[in-house]
Image (cartoon, rainbow, N blue to C red; front, side, top):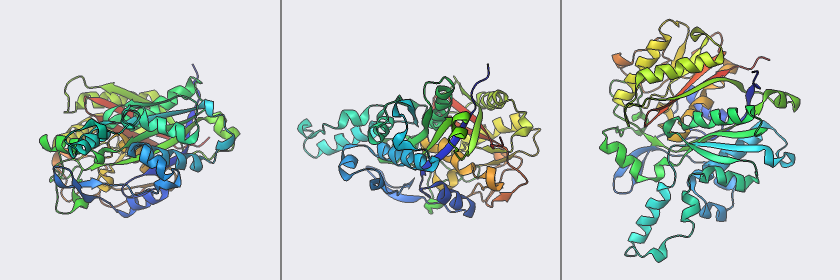
Length: 411
């Protein structure tokens, strides 16, 4: 069965160190991180990745009061992606547009805030907002996009922990190939820094990063890494069938040619390198490539002591005979954007197809020997002869794994 080829034609994002693909990429190449300390309820100061985008560019102040932070991030990214795609959106059939948003968690932010608010009034529920229920349903970020943009096609979120960004893209690919939609908005969003629960949870697990310099707190693969920097953010892509994109004269950013999602089935938190290896292998096989064809692996590495080691073990197992495959990571720049992580990290590497430059993994002062990888790009960007194929890893709690293979579009 010949399935339609699926391509990316637009990117919209907000991250702690950039609100457009050009700004984000420039800071990745220049080694510019942007992590700050925030005051977290019940916990004091913690390092976090905070986005500073112009929300009122696409929403009224009333809409911002009624909606959620995740919805606002999603609307901003969707609108920027549509603009970047140069599609004639006002005249496009909105019934043929699908919205598929990956998330780690949603709703607990609003419930936490409401409980905190009514605690000031002796827990009198008369002060509970009537906006609570639409704010907390799982489909909220995707639904807010459809309301804002008048999209009448299908929308939903994909709860896939920190593999969610890839999962959103995979869902879009499948729906386009099934002819359920003609144009898709897909990727991931995260409002994680708005909830104290995720910070407290990581702290109780001994997995919350700390450092005197917030910009040094996220340290994937470094011997002194001590945990995760929680971040918010979002990245959405516009996806189309290749024939449709060519017919309208779209500028094609990349082609999605393979993917895999699988499950560890072994632990709530600790990753399973054997299952991660299988995920990468199946993704590459589904693309029709040889392992040695992969030019760049974007790692998931979260800066946790065990998580980084396990992923490195999986990569070494799969790519041990691939001397020209390079490896990098983005979390030293922006922290861990949870449901948005995979999509943001992919966006940061897509320009490599054009400029043949690999952005570095920063904050590695002393590489952990157990995280040794051939061709790990450290602290400085690397110019190479060519980048044609990228593997994007994204793994999450409860043992959910995802890997996406992308190709430089060359007709």
